[in-house]
Length: 187
Image 1 (cartoon, rainbow, N blue to C red):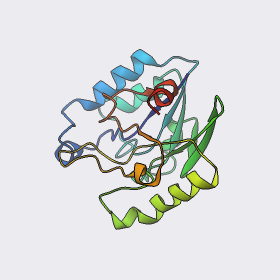
Image 2 (cartoon, one colour):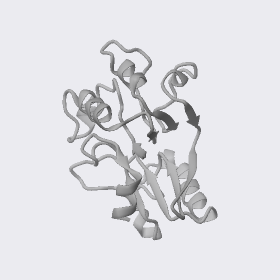
Image 3 (cartoon, rainbow, N blue to C red):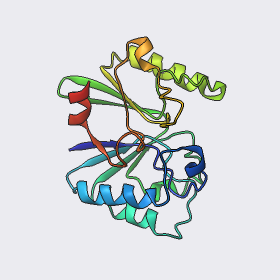
Image 4 (tube, one colour):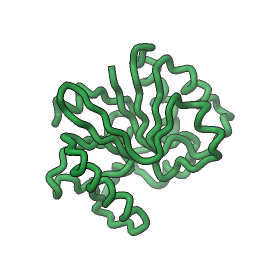
């Protein structure tokens, strides 16, 4: 089975202050869900913002390493830790996007949405590139992260471009991975 997850933000202490939907111990919740769901036959696509740093004082990254599935990272804006660290945790690392064909549908996997209504200028070019890639490759779905759940509202604007998207940021998924079957069912 194919699964997706994003924005785990392991060891990002300040994320609790930035998101009203994070809580003390969110890392354990994520890992418990992954350990319960994933098998050696699965592929897990992590769509960016994996960990804040490479130190593993609480064992979160060791637990991640022990997950039985194949793990693929599509890098996000917080995945700039030293290059030698990420290969310890992933079987494959992709810099910006990945295409996935499944049951006659084409999926664009990226950390970024096709439109972020928060209008963060520093990501404008990356987000515009996602829109271009989606159209160029004639995709059916965009699966992304980056946009966090917050009290002001959801800031993903993919629908304004007619793009079917699914945000797999853990804050929207109950801190668990989402299967490709769930994405198709909702889409």
